[in-house]
Image 1 (cartoon, rainbow, N blue to C red):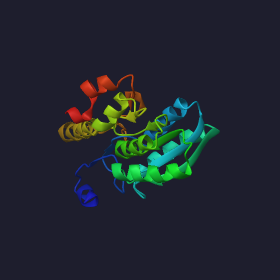
Image 2: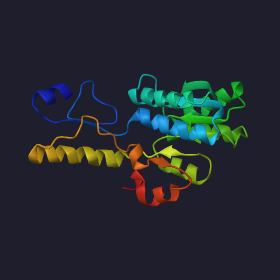
Image 3: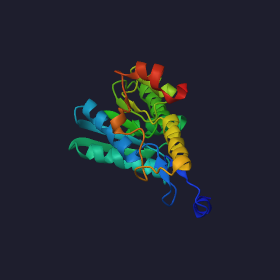
Length: 218
């Protein structure tokens, strides 16, 4: 479908995962950057040392692979942090709980956990609470409603506002500008939100996020 549209000079904007070939525009978050920023914050929260579990996204999914690369790059900057396990939960809450339950059997002294999205992070939190491990630092992604509430309640350290509403709006703006006067984006990949947009959701800003910023309010 992408090839046929491009043969007819129809502009295509992809949001999130790119098409197999370069299109008019790609926007959405830079998944590697999101993985790096969240893992970096988690590493700092545990003092740069300890055991970490990574709950991955679906195997083979490009966004999950890039986010995992960002996680690993951030943790590699801390010689005293050890990734003791890294396993998929397919972006699902139930699997996040089940996978974490199993991993805690082998790694009962884990200090932090980073999950590939809020849903799997919330499942991991259920498993941690059931095991009586309330001091494990948890990071997620997406800034969904339940994830934001978990941050407010002190159950999750932070999440990343992926803002699908904003990135879809941005894509539409570039398409409209192009159709109106031929204006093209400054580059093929215009990441949004990026690190410049203060995308991390923490205890310090979660109330403002839920009231004024959250994409699920639109």
